[in-house]
Structure formats: structure tokens, C-alpha cells
Length: 174
Length: 286
Image (cartoon, rainbow over all chains, first blue to last red; front, side):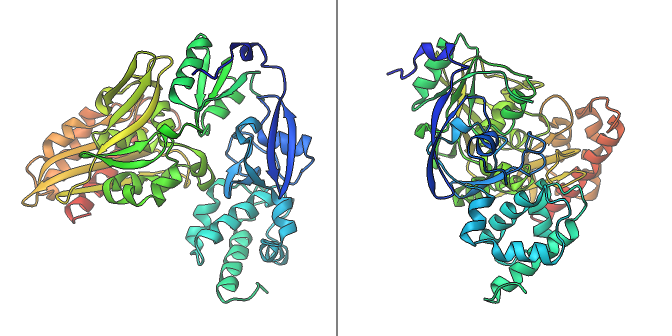
């Protein structure tokens, strides 16, 4: 009944095979159990759009979609994601689902250094998929876990607000 | 900032998880949402040999009515506290507290059982189990048991959980028509830990308080019921005078820790203000 093999206890430094679907592609990686998902994405899969910032869930730069929900890829180990479907900023970009958000961020200068932008976009994408017309306050609340140290929040809220309005009117943001 | 090397085991059943813990000589940690555990491992505040992933154990999932209680599976995520209709109907205090728990992405991963097990004195849900008179269902090497929330939180990050035990569910008495609840917290920034927070559940008879449980968080080593303030409110219609008496009673109920950032007097002041606001809302039928 156990399923637990004690020899595992002496294999902490050995890698294990993890299978994921990343951006629509099946991949397998060899990771050590203590390797975080963000490190696996950036190092093994060379998907460097996901940024490792604080590495403790405070800054939001590492957000990815895990089985459809935004999560911090620094707050989980790659082994925990075995069998999961992940979309990173690269996948969301290629699919075009956030093209209007990206264009609006660009148009309104909603970024300076851009380090926080992938996380902001993943978060904004989830917000708009749940709430069609969020108020500015709701947008700010949703972004409370995403730091922008270039202090660009106002333009970021503007951009998300504009896309929400444009989407609900059936067109793209201008 | 990386965790010390550990082995990883994904348990399929509670028995497998408990067995793995025992066979690692209890030098193991259960991981569910991991939203507090992963940073603790990264900072090497903890360095177990074995991490036991319990998120694939079906027995720990689901929310359902069971007798006079709502049984909330330990793996229920914070975001489900917002989306699950049974929670909104039968444990509305938890539904009201959920938006204040961290940020949306944390709520997508963090679990209710994990939050209660960690017993962070600044967290919303552990304190709300006290206000709700909930019972914590625990599985361990010597079988399973239920512990009342009143007896669960012992000291700073210390609970009635013994090594190798894990929370399987939390049982919350069903919300009734003659009850009212209120919740609020004050934080410097939305999503940050509260300077002080409070939730309460009251039963009314003829518009007077028949029973009330008031629980504060971020006021000391554990979530804290304020029994002196509760006692002053029994039989009252929550008029200004009785609310003032309850606010005054907080001085005897709370002993906020010394801290440069938030001096005890300031915390006590915020607690009084919050209590006044929430009792006012209850009086209006919140």
C-alpha cells in the first residue's frame, strides 16, 4: 500500500524526469527536486520571458499560467508541476490572446525597464478573463501582487482599463 | 536563495503520505499550495530531507454538507473560497475574508488546510476558524481526530498538530438564518499582512446578541478570541454604549507584542476602531 520507496531519501541530489506541456508543446526535463519551476523554464527550456525577481512570491515577475490559472513559478518546484499544462509569456504572445494588451502597454508606455511586464500581462490576462469590465479599483487590487519599480502603475492601469473597454465593445484597443 | 536538496514524493493517499513521513524519521514536510513553505525552504528556515506532495490526494478535496457542518477539504484553494457556492451560503465569513488573503496568484495555489496548519498569527483563515467555532480534522499515525479551533492554536506557529500529522478537513457549523457576520482588516497595502484584522459571528434573538465570537489576527502569537469583549455584548442590541464597553474590554483581552514598526498602543487602537466598525455593521444587520 505504501508506494513510498525509502531509497528515495538518499537521492536528494539526483534529478528526476518531469513531463509538462509548455506553450502547447510536450516537453520532458531532468530537474533536481529543489529546482523551482521558474528556474526550469528559464534554464532548461530557455524560456527567459518569465522573470525571477524576489523568488518569494512578492513581486509577481514570475507569473505563468498553470492549468489555466496565474501562479508564481518561483513558489513551486518543477516536480510539483509534473503532468501540468503551462503557458508562459512566450506562449501567450504567440497565440495572440494578449496582443491587444501588449499593444496597449506599448502605446501608453506602461513599462520602462520591462522587468515586471510579463507578470503584469499574465495577471491582466487572468483578470480580464474573469471580470469583463473591472473598475480601476478592481484592476489595482488585482495588480497588488505585481511590483513595478519604475513606478508605472498609472499607465498600466490605464492600459488594462482601455483593453477591457475595447474588448467589451467588441473591437480591439486603439 | 535556494532550498537545501531534498527528495520529493507525490502521495496518492493519506496513508501513503503518513507512511512516507514516518519512514523519513519525521524529517519531512507535507507540501500542498506551498505559498509559505517554499519561501521558508528557500530561506532555509526549514530544510527537511523529504517533501511529501499531498495535492494529488482526492480524499483531501471537496466541500460538502455533513450533518450540521460544512466539511471543507484541506486542499480547498483560497480562490475556491470565493467561487464555491456552498462556502458563500454556509460559511459566508470565510467567503468575506478570502479577498483579503494575499494576492490573486497566491490565492490560486494556497490551500485552506495549509493556512490553518501553518497558523500564521497574521493570517485571516486561522483566525476565522476561531470565530466560526470550527473543528479541525486531523489524520496521523495514531488515527484521525477532531480538535476544536479553540484548542488548536497554541503559540507562535505552534498548533495541536503533532509531528507526522496533517489536516484533512475543517468542519464549520452551518451558517443560520438568525446569525450575522462581519469581517475587515487594516493593511498598509492591499494584500499585505494586516496591521490588525478581525472577524465575528453573532447569533441574535429578538434583535439582541444571544451569542458572539470575535476573533482578531495580527495581534499576538496566535489568532485571538476576545472573550472579555464578547461577554460585554451578550444581551445587547449593539447600542453605542455597549459597543464602547466592548472596545474598552479589548485592553484586557489583547496584549499586542512590542514592535518598532507597530507599537502595541497603535495596534490596540486599530483593534478598537475595527471592533467598533464591525459591531456597528452587525447592528445594522450586516
